[in-house]
Amino acid sequence: MFKVGIGQDSHRIQEPAAGKALVLGGVTLKEDFALEGNSDSDVVLHAITNAISGITGKPILGPVADKLCRAGITDSAVYLERALEDLAGIAYRLAHVSVTLECRRPKILPVLSSMTAKVADLLGLAPEDVGITATSGEGLTDFGKGLGIQAFACVTAMRAEA
Image (tube, rainbow, N blue to C red; front, side, top):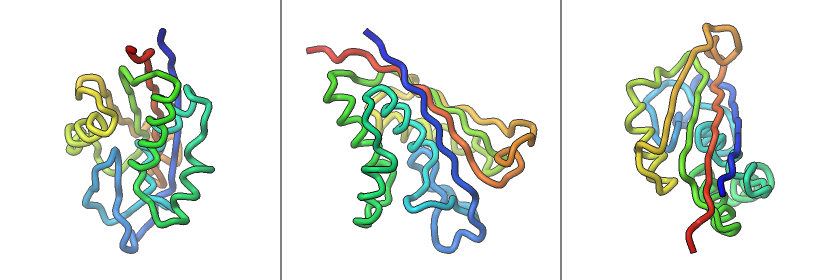
């Protein structure tokens, strides 16, 4: 049996970065801006976490992540790990993940392979089971105008083998 979850996340761009790094898909990018938020504001991992929460019915971003942030844990990979634990708790495992980013900046193509590899590693998937795409949306939204970054994720999970 398969289940599908859809997740979204977005954060406003913070300029200057003020000592905070831009992190997308678990990869730290060398940019002069970051994303606003209490955590590392990794919209890719947040969207995937939300998609997994859509399958498990257990919200991580908000109730769990906020407590972790207050305790000084701002790495979104930790929140994702909690969502994966919830998924395993209902006897499912991920089979495929697709992520679409909407942003004018940074350019995603130069970091696409490293982002795909990192997301695959975090999820315990082969890189060919992770798809990441990006669009500027022709500048029609605030994300396409460079004011923030938005991510959508679709995850497919299958019943884990006993």
